[in-house]
Length: 357
Image 1 (cartoon, rainbow, N blue to C red):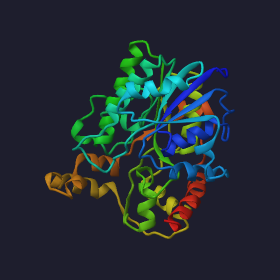
Image 2: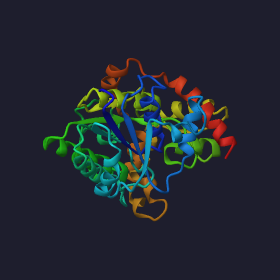
Image 3: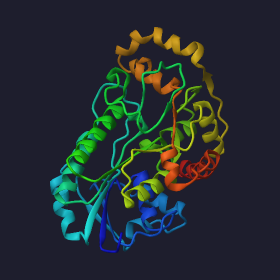
């Protein structure tokens, strides 16, 4: 890419978006992007995440808000055509789009709705209106799966995309990510150059009340009394930002699975507590016998308030033994950040955040 290029970034004030900005500015693992960075934000967007990320990189708190290479545009991404009209006068050279905006609602269960599908449709409309040369979608490992029983350990890779997964067993977030990825693949079939990145659970930093910091918040507030021997794929936010920028600039189609490790939840939660410098005791629920006990209580899933804790989606979240193969991500960036380093460095920052809330 030469200097006559522009990158439009959605979700720029979020956790991942702010670290992508740092990557594009050359403050992390990649050389500074030589073109123009157009960062989108809503009128209601808080700058707290931007300030925290700036401090993490030992920069002034207003670094990302006021950097001369970043053109901030206030718009509502739920209207892609209007967003494109606002962006056009600010474009220099050819334009590409990184779509990092998303609503995380993993605790909502299988009922309800999530705006992610509409967001990606409007982002694709915006991209088409801008005649964007490339579109990068931040998907999720939530779109992946297979037919193996919950008790079995399965290794999942890029090809394990399951658009027809049992919808009863999926929360609104997973369903929205599956449908969003289908929209991007459809655009690809129609000629749009795309990259798809599927991160695991992103471990980073930010305001405690923001959805990506749910686990940090619960550990700090002592509202997470139990752990399990289930597991999931996790990844450092810096690694995801690095992968996204490299894949976008080099036009890697993917899907790229960004997972650095697959710890048991008990190991992860204890490591997060240690990183925050607090002692927490978790009551560990093991698959045997708790998985079958929860299955026998499946009839409670229709009850208000507590029903979601007895749903199939909750059982999957608590006791899944899936292991995610992040080789496609490491092929781009080399080694992932070790989990203990992530928990130590992010945990120290989150301890400061928690003390200051």
